[in-house]
Image 1 (tube, helix red, strand yellow):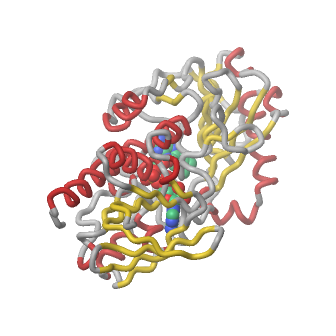
Image 2: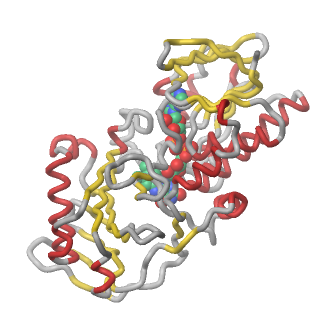
Length: 367
Ligand SMILES: Cc1cc2nc3c(=O)[nH]c(=O)nc-3n(C[C@H](O)[C@H](O)[C@H](O)COP(=O)(O)OP(=O)(O)OC[C@H]3O[C@@H](n4cnc5c(N)ncnc54)[C@H](O)[C@@H]3O)c2cc1C
């Protein structure tokens, strides 16, 4: 049977689109290359296993006051949010030959919010609203071919390669990744392919480090857990303590993707722990666990272009031209008109893409 809409990618955008289409009676089938849901949302426990109450190695914040799309989605799904801890002093490390300074923290504006359980709570709530048998994990779409009635997908999974027919494709992955990893028959117009390749995937060049502790000892010392450093290896550090009280600090690495590979995870981990001890005192020396995620080394997020071509994607239309314009709709965060690259962008772009496909299905409208 031909499914009406094949959704490629089960990150926030793909799952939100699948939720909205399923709710309006459209048959959807989601194909996700990873063995897990969430894409750039990754919440794990101390042993790095995906968790319902853990630490975010991908997206962790949203800003409801300035991002209505994600505020509404969190509200509709009934997920509890809490403010990023900013109570207490901040630490600033200017140079290696002088001790870090301590300064009065300012209230955040706009306030950064987190989700109870971690950002995976959003992914779980979305997936719960899509029929479970319509989500295929470990299923990589490798090629798309236009057919008289729609599109034929080549899907690679544990049992080999199979063909799936769909009327429409909703591609919920970064445009740059789509250009780098998918084959199209007929080929995508050169201008469209260039637009996709030239669209940076937000945060694809970044790496996060997280250290878990028995207690949030920095709070007892009047520190918020926020620190900035011009020494590194982390440039920016924040409190990652969960809503249920498990204490942690996380930071974004200032070491570039190529250097990270050369230095290696073990040496980077040692350097990050040493930095936390410099900034927050000797209690930081012995974390109960450490976590590290290099997104630039993840082929389902980053391409060879991402280490050198970063930044915020700017919205450009049309995302698809030529033969494919009627059958293929882009839905990933990078294609958002308002919040490209953010969770809010994933919410906005996927809702817009789902509405476009729905209109085409019901009214026979074309691009
Ligand atoms: C370190 C980091 C920190 C971030 N912090 C924040 C933050 O604090 N706040 C915020 O708003 N945003 C943040 N972001 C950005 C946020 O994570 C993204 O905007 C959002 O998750 C994008 O969702 P998406 O569904 O559009 O794409 P993705 O999450 O990238 O999902 C795409 C999915 O497609 C799958 N896929 C790829 N190729 C194929 C294929 N061929 N076949 C099948 N499946 C495929 C992938 O496996 C993936 O699951 C951060 C990102 C990172 C990496």
